Image (cartoon, rainbow, N blue to C red; front, side, top):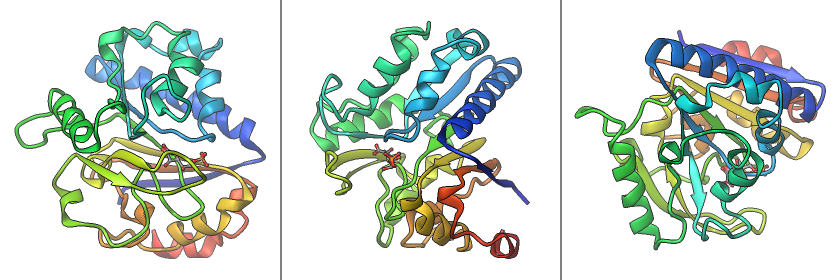
Length: 256
Ligand code: 6PG
Protein backbone atom coordinates (compact mmCIF):
# COMPACT_ATOMS: atom_id res chain seq x y z
CA UNK A 1 0.00 0.00 0.00
CA UNK A 2 1.35 3.40 -0.83
CA UNK A 3 0.50 6.46 1.16
CA UNK A 4 -2.37 8.14 -0.75
CA UNK A 5 -4.41 11.10 0.43
CA UNK A 6 -6.82 13.72 -0.86
CA UNK A 7 -7.21 16.90 1.20
CA UNK A 8 -9.84 19.51 0.44
CA UNK A 9 -9.43 23.19 1.40
CA UNK A 10 -11.92 26.07 1.42
CA UNK A 11 -10.03 28.06 -1.22
CA UNK A 12 -6.82 28.54 -3.20
CA UNK A 13 -5.20 30.57 -0.43
CA UNK A 14 -5.73 27.91 2.26
CA UNK A 15 -4.54 25.20 -0.13
CA UNK A 16 -1.40 27.21 -0.99
CA UNK A 17 -0.57 27.80 2.66
CA UNK A 18 -0.93 24.12 3.42
CA UNK A 19 1.29 23.28 0.42
CA UNK A 20 3.94 25.73 1.68
CA UNK A 21 3.87 24.11 5.13
CA UNK A 22 4.11 20.64 3.64
CA UNK A 23 6.95 21.65 1.36
CA UNK A 24 9.01 23.24 4.10
CA UNK A 25 8.47 20.17 6.28
CA UNK A 26 9.51 17.75 3.50
CA UNK A 27 12.49 19.90 2.57
CA UNK A 28 13.70 19.94 6.18
CA UNK A 29 13.25 16.18 6.54
CA UNK A 30 15.03 15.44 3.24
CA UNK A 31 17.99 17.61 4.16
CA UNK A 32 18.22 15.99 7.58
CA UNK A 33 18.08 12.49 6.11
CA UNK A 34 20.04 12.90 2.86
CA UNK A 35 21.73 16.31 2.97
CA UNK A 36 19.68 17.84 0.14
CA UNK A 37 16.16 18.43 -1.15
CA UNK A 38 15.47 17.45 -4.76
CA UNK A 39 12.37 19.28 -5.95
CA UNK A 40 10.62 19.17 -9.34
CA UNK A 41 8.42 22.24 -9.91
CA UNK A 42 5.38 22.70 -12.13
CA UNK A 43 4.11 25.56 -14.25
CA UNK A 44 0.66 27.07 -14.62
CA UNK A 45 -1.32 29.52 -12.53
CA UNK A 46 -2.14 27.20 -9.62
CA UNK A 47 1.31 27.01 -7.94
CA UNK A 48 2.11 30.69 -8.32
CA UNK A 49 0.66 31.63 -4.93
CA UNK A 50 2.71 28.81 -3.35
CA UNK A 51 5.90 30.18 -4.94
CA UNK A 52 5.14 33.67 -3.66
CA UNK A 53 4.37 32.39 -0.16
CA UNK A 54 7.65 30.47 -0.05
CA UNK A 55 9.50 33.70 -0.81
CA UNK A 56 8.01 35.38 2.30
CA UNK A 57 8.43 34.78 6.03
CA UNK A 58 7.90 32.42 7.74
CA UNK A 59 8.60 30.05 4.81
CA UNK A 60 11.55 31.98 3.38
CA UNK A 61 13.29 31.45 6.75
CA UNK A 62 12.11 27.87 7.27
CA UNK A 63 13.13 26.23 3.97
CA UNK A 64 16.81 25.15 3.81
CA UNK A 65 17.41 26.95 0.48
CA UNK A 66 21.14 26.31 0.30
CA UNK A 67 20.45 22.55 0.17
CA UNK A 68 17.60 22.77 -2.38
CA UNK A 69 18.06 21.53 -5.95
CA UNK A 70 15.36 22.76 -8.29
CA UNK A 71 14.28 20.95 -11.44
CA UNK A 72 11.15 21.30 -13.55
CA UNK A 73 8.54 18.67 -14.36
CA UNK A 74 8.01 20.34 -17.72
CA UNK A 75 8.83 23.45 -19.69
CA UNK A 76 7.28 25.35 -22.57
CA UNK A 77 9.83 25.87 -25.32
CA UNK A 78 10.31 29.61 -25.14
CA UNK A 79 13.38 31.54 -23.95
CA UNK A 80 13.71 31.80 -20.15
CA UNK A 81 12.85 35.51 -20.17
CA UNK A 82 9.69 35.06 -22.28
CA UNK A 83 6.18 35.16 -20.85
CA UNK A 84 5.12 31.52 -20.64
CA UNK A 85 8.47 30.15 -19.42
CA UNK A 86 7.94 27.98 -16.36
CA UNK A 87 11.49 28.76 -15.24
CA UNK A 88 10.86 32.48 -15.75
CA UNK A 89 7.76 32.30 -13.56
CA UNK A 90 9.69 30.71 -10.69
CA UNK A 91 12.61 33.08 -11.14
CA UNK A 92 10.48 36.18 -10.63
CA UNK A 93 8.17 34.82 -7.93
CA UNK A 94 10.70 32.85 -5.88
CA UNK A 95 14.30 32.51 -7.06
CA UNK A 96 15.06 36.24 -7.12
CA UNK A 97 14.08 36.34 -3.44
CA UNK A 98 15.62 33.26 -1.79
CA UNK A 99 19.25 32.04 -1.59
CA UNK A 100 19.26 28.92 -3.79
CA UNK A 101 22.78 28.58 -5.28
CA UNK A 102 22.63 29.14 -9.07
CA UNK A 103 24.47 25.83 -9.65
CA UNK A 104 21.49 24.04 -8.02
CA UNK A 105 18.88 25.46 -10.38
CA UNK A 106 18.43 22.99 -13.24
CA UNK A 107 16.17 24.58 -15.78
CA UNK A 108 15.01 22.97 -19.01
CA UNK A 109 16.57 25.03 -21.80
CA UNK A 110 13.43 26.23 -23.54
CA UNK A 111 15.44 28.24 -26.06
CA UNK A 112 16.75 25.03 -27.70
CA UNK A 113 15.00 22.98 -30.41
CA UNK A 114 12.69 20.37 -28.80
CA UNK A 115 14.77 17.19 -29.18
CA UNK A 116 17.93 19.02 -28.13
CA UNK A 117 16.24 20.51 -25.08
CA UNK A 118 14.95 17.05 -24.07
CA UNK A 119 18.41 15.47 -24.53
CA UNK A 120 20.14 18.29 -22.69
CA UNK A 121 17.77 17.94 -19.72
CA UNK A 122 18.16 14.14 -19.71
CA UNK A 123 21.94 14.63 -19.41
CA UNK A 124 21.45 17.07 -16.54
CA UNK A 125 19.17 14.59 -14.74
CA UNK A 126 21.71 11.81 -15.29
CA UNK A 127 24.18 13.69 -13.09
CA UNK A 128 21.79 13.07 -10.19
CA UNK A 129 21.06 9.43 -10.95
CA UNK A 130 22.70 6.04 -10.68
CA UNK A 131 23.57 3.37 -13.28
CA UNK A 132 20.19 1.68 -12.74
CA UNK A 133 18.23 4.93 -12.64
CA UNK A 134 19.69 7.72 -14.80
CA UNK A 135 17.62 10.42 -13.12
CA UNK A 136 17.17 11.76 -9.57
CA UNK A 137 14.74 10.30 -7.12
CA UNK A 138 12.84 13.52 -6.40
CA UNK A 139 11.96 14.22 -2.79
CA UNK A 140 8.92 16.11 -4.04
CA UNK A 141 7.42 16.53 -7.50
CA UNK A 142 4.81 19.26 -7.68
CA UNK A 143 2.07 18.46 -10.19
CA UNK A 144 -0.81 20.37 -11.74
CA UNK A 145 -3.83 19.12 -13.65
CA UNK A 146 -5.44 20.52 -16.80
CA UNK A 147 -9.20 20.38 -17.33
CA UNK A 148 -8.39 17.87 -20.12
CA UNK A 149 -6.57 15.60 -17.65
CA UNK A 150 -3.00 16.49 -18.66
CA UNK A 151 -0.31 16.78 -16.04
CA UNK A 152 3.16 18.26 -16.52
CA UNK A 153 3.26 18.11 -20.34
CA UNK A 154 1.84 14.60 -20.57
CA UNK A 155 -1.23 15.17 -22.71
CA UNK A 156 -4.27 12.87 -23.12
CA UNK A 157 -3.97 9.92 -25.47
CA UNK A 158 -2.44 6.45 -25.46
CA UNK A 159 1.09 6.59 -24.03
CA UNK A 160 4.13 5.56 -26.05
CA UNK A 161 6.34 2.86 -24.53
CA UNK A 162 9.28 5.30 -24.43
CA UNK A 163 7.74 7.12 -21.46
CA UNK A 164 8.49 4.11 -19.24
CA UNK A 165 12.17 4.12 -20.26
CA UNK A 166 13.29 7.65 -21.15
CA UNK A 167 13.45 10.40 -18.54
CA UNK A 168 12.38 13.20 -20.90
CA UNK A 169 10.24 13.66 -23.99
CA UNK A 170 9.76 16.48 -26.49
CA UNK A 171 6.02 16.85 -27.04
CA UNK A 172 3.39 19.15 -28.55
CA UNK A 173 0.27 19.93 -26.57
CA UNK A 174 -2.29 22.67 -27.06
CA UNK A 175 -3.79 24.05 -23.86
CA UNK A 176 -5.27 27.43 -22.98
CA UNK A 177 -3.33 29.26 -25.68
CA UNK A 178 -0.02 28.48 -23.95
CA UNK A 179 3.17 27.63 -25.87
CA UNK A 180 2.49 24.18 -27.34
CA UNK A 181 6.01 22.86 -27.92
CA UNK A 182 7.25 21.44 -24.66
CA UNK A 183 9.64 19.10 -22.86
CA UNK A 184 8.32 16.94 -20.06
CA UNK A 185 9.56 14.44 -17.52
CA UNK A 186 8.00 11.03 -18.00
CA UNK A 187 6.10 8.71 -15.63
CA UNK A 188 9.34 6.70 -15.27
CA UNK A 189 10.80 9.67 -13.39
CA UNK A 190 7.66 10.95 -11.65
CA UNK A 191 6.81 7.51 -10.32
CA UNK A 192 10.23 7.27 -8.66
CA UNK A 193 9.47 10.32 -6.52
CA UNK A 194 9.16 10.15 -2.77
CA UNK A 195 6.13 12.45 -2.90
CA UNK A 196 3.90 13.46 -5.82
CA UNK A 197 2.00 16.54 -4.70
CA UNK A 198 -0.91 17.59 -6.92
CA UNK A 199 -2.40 21.08 -6.49
CA UNK A 200 -5.75 21.55 -8.23
CA UNK A 201 -8.25 24.38 -7.89
CA UNK A 202 -11.42 25.57 -9.60
CA UNK A 203 -14.65 24.10 -10.83
CA UNK A 204 -13.33 23.76 -14.39
CA UNK A 205 -11.06 20.97 -13.11
CA UNK A 206 -13.72 19.11 -11.08
CA UNK A 207 -14.61 16.60 -13.77
CA UNK A 208 -10.97 15.86 -14.60
CA UNK A 209 -10.18 15.38 -10.89
CA UNK A 210 -13.03 12.88 -10.54
CA UNK A 211 -12.01 11.00 -13.70
CA UNK A 212 -8.43 10.62 -12.46
CA UNK A 213 -9.17 9.78 -8.84
CA UNK A 214 -11.97 7.39 -9.64
CA UNK A 215 -9.85 5.45 -12.14
CA UNK A 216 -7.49 2.73 -10.99
CA UNK A 217 -3.83 3.68 -11.55
CA UNK A 218 -2.81 2.24 -14.92
CA UNK A 219 0.41 2.79 -16.87
CA UNK A 220 -1.56 2.39 -20.15
CA UNK A 221 -4.34 4.86 -19.32
CA UNK A 222 -5.04 7.55 -21.91
CA UNK A 223 -5.56 9.90 -18.97
CA UNK A 224 -1.99 11.00 -18.12
CA UNK A 225 -2.54 11.75 -14.44
CA UNK A 226 -3.90 8.21 -13.96
CA UNK A 227 -0.49 6.86 -15.06
CA UNK A 228 1.18 8.47 -12.06
CA UNK A 229 1.45 6.26 -9.04
CA UNK A 230 4.77 6.21 -7.18
CA UNK A 231 6.43 2.80 -6.99
CA UNK A 232 7.70 3.46 -3.46
CA UNK A 233 6.49 6.89 -2.45
CA UNK A 234 3.44 8.87 -1.45
CA UNK A 235 0.84 10.70 -3.49
CA UNK A 236 -1.14 13.63 -2.11
CA UNK A 237 -3.83 15.65 -3.84
CA UNK A 238 -4.64 19.10 -2.45
CA UNK A 239 -7.95 20.37 -3.85
CA UNK A 240 -10.08 23.39 -3.19
CA UNK A 241 -13.81 22.88 -2.64
CA UNK A 242 -14.62 23.78 -6.24
CA UNK A 243 -12.23 21.19 -7.70
CA UNK A 244 -13.65 18.52 -5.39
CA UNK A 245 -17.32 18.94 -6.32
CA UNK A 246 -17.54 15.91 -8.63
CA UNK A 247 -15.79 13.50 -6.24
CA UNK A 248 -17.46 10.74 -4.35
CA UNK A 249 -15.67 9.54 -1.23
CA UNK A 250 -16.91 5.99 -1.80
CA UNK A 251 -15.27 5.76 -5.21
CA UNK A 252 -11.99 6.89 -3.76
CA UNK A 253 -12.05 4.23 -1.10
CA UNK A 254 -13.00 1.57 -3.65
CA UNK A 255 -10.27 2.21 -6.18
CA UNK A 256 -7.30 3.21 -4.09
C1 6PG B 1 2.56 23.72 -17.59
C2 6PG B 1 2.21 22.77 -16.51
C3 6PG B 1 0.86 22.14 -16.64
C4 6PG B 1 -0.06 22.82 -15.63
C5 6PG B 1 -1.52 22.61 -15.98
C6 6PG B 1 -2.44 23.33 -15.04
O1 6PG B 1 3.71 23.96 -17.79
O2 6PG B 1 1.65 24.27 -18.22
O3 6PG B 1 3.15 22.20 -15.76
O4 6PG B 1 0.80 20.77 -16.52
O5 6PG B 1 0.21 22.32 -14.35
O6 6PG B 1 -1.73 23.06 -17.30
O7 6PG B 1 -2.26 24.70 -15.22
P1 6PG B 1 -3.04 25.76 -14.32
O8 6PG B 1 -2.46 25.64 -12.94
O9 6PG B 1 -2.71 27.10 -14.92
O10 6PG B 1 -4.46 25.42 -14.37
